Amino acid sequence: MIAGEAPMVQLTPDECRVLGVLVEKAHTTASQYPMSLNAVTTGCNQKSNRDPMVELDEDRVVRALEGLRDKGLVTFADTLHSRVMKYKHNARESLEIGTRELVILTEMLLRGPQTLGEIRGRASRMHPLGSLEEVRNTLDEMMRRPKPLVQSLPPAPGSRAPRFAQLLCPDLHPLDAPAPRAPDAGTAPQPHPHLAERLDALEAEVADLRRIVEHLARSLGETDLLAPPRPPE
Image (cartoon, rainbow, N blue to C red; front, side):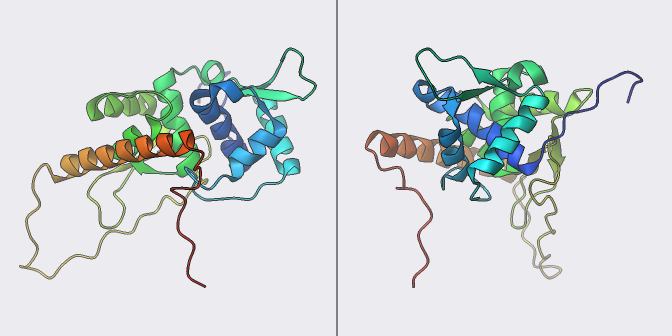
């Protein structure tokens, strides 16, 4: 690090979840933003678009909000005729990033390492991201910064697509992905040279369809429509 240069901001897991919720809701439910403590807590504990799922109480959320305020990432919001304290994020200005970078970073804070297609499809619910190539270029820019915000990871087992993870809290999600078991010699099929790209495109299409269904579900008040099924008793 250059002498006199401020170190890269580092967040706790709770701060990551709270910051991710504030950014997400600012883009997806702008009418309910800035957010009250109760709304932030509910957003942290929701069952969709989160990995891992957590159960934070208001005390933990308050501590995370205070930590984010100390780091310049959250501020109090002056709301007319409101007696409830509300909060808003200051991540774009504090981290000196654009909206595309911000929603990509937020998706990683909320759901961990992801492939290019997953990032494009999921983060597009917050802000349009364009083609896979444009998303890849944005990720490259985030990795080339003097203080990188993103790192590249090996593919997960069973996949050929590389993943990307945020660096605001490197230990937030497991990063190690054991290599898939190799098939017997002489029996391994030769992969198509563009298979990873085609899989990424397919994942992006599926994520787009899921985003549309989630939007329709919210408009109908069916917010738990896509929640994971409960295991049989």
